[in-house]
Image (cartoon, rainbow, N blue to C red; front, side):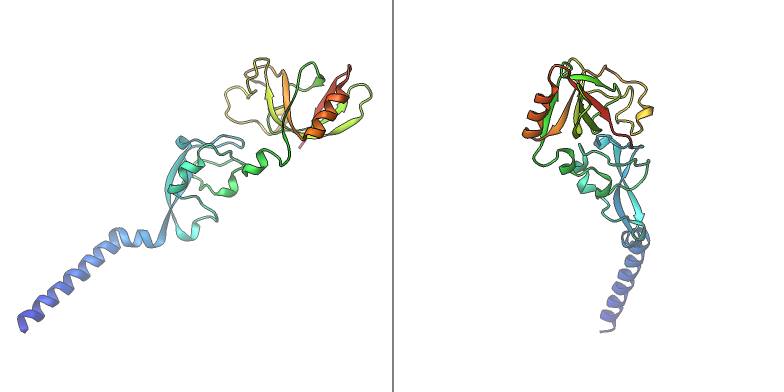
Length: 211
């Protein structure tokens, strides 16, 4: 009986010591920290996120932001568009990403306005800009639209030189990799038909909306 008690006591001591070692080496860390997805580099507003831009980081549970993404969510983050500037090492949450439904408005589709149909527009127009469209003959306003695509003569998207994202400030768009030729706007079939009819011989004037 005494031998049995000694063995049980020794086992309890081993279990206690083992538990203490686990707590100090890993248990405490798991209890007080959480693993989240963070930015491996500065991510600009409008950047298309790739897995190379992401990393995992451990933060205190009380410092974990609402909606923080976890490592399992990294594959789903690839291809998403940043809705704000995300500095290096900052946690990434779903609130920082453009909602998919905001990329293409309900009931609308990309509708091309060719160079021949546009009398005048700024060369700094980029995807996502809000533009006001006027009839060229008398400057009658025909509505406000979101630019779905801004393309060159070869139908390639216009981007700012050396950047992955569009500069939000219009006056900072001082260079681009290609020359703007035409745009595609988000419009309903009725709106597009109206614009094509209004273009006429004079064409349309496209003016960017300021911030």
